[in-house]
Each structure stands twice: as structure tokens, then as C-alpha cells.
Amino acid sequence: MSGFVQHAVAVALDDVAGWGAMLASALKETGGELSKKEMDWADEILGLKNRRKRSVA
Image (cartoon, rainbow, N blue to C red; front, side):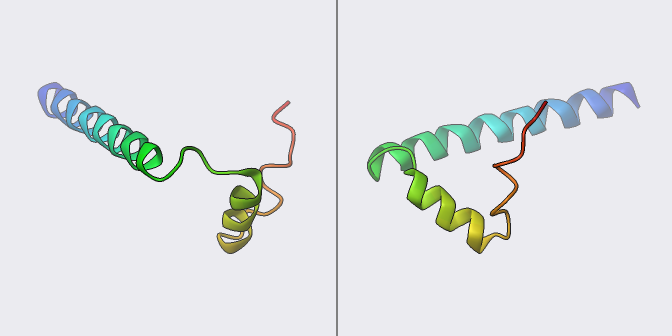
């Protein structure tokens, strides 16, 4: 079972790296990171409007 878990973790890490690279490329091609206004809009659409405003402490 350990080999299965190691393989699953390795595949998951590769997927995360691939998505990260794709996101970085897309952001670069479309003008960079989202503005505060864009983030607020996305949070509202996704129902996360108050989520980012909470303290993590």
C-alpha cells in the first residue's frame, strides 16, 4: 500500500505544479494578477464575499 500512496502523492504534486504553471502563464498573457475590484467581484459571484475579510489569527 505504501507504494500506491507514494505514487498518488507524486501524481498529485505533478498536477499541482502543472496547474500552477498554467495559471502563471494565463495571468502573464492577460495582464497580470487580478485587481482588488476583480477579486471582490469574483468573491461575490462565488459566495465568498466576506471570507477574505476575516482575520486568520
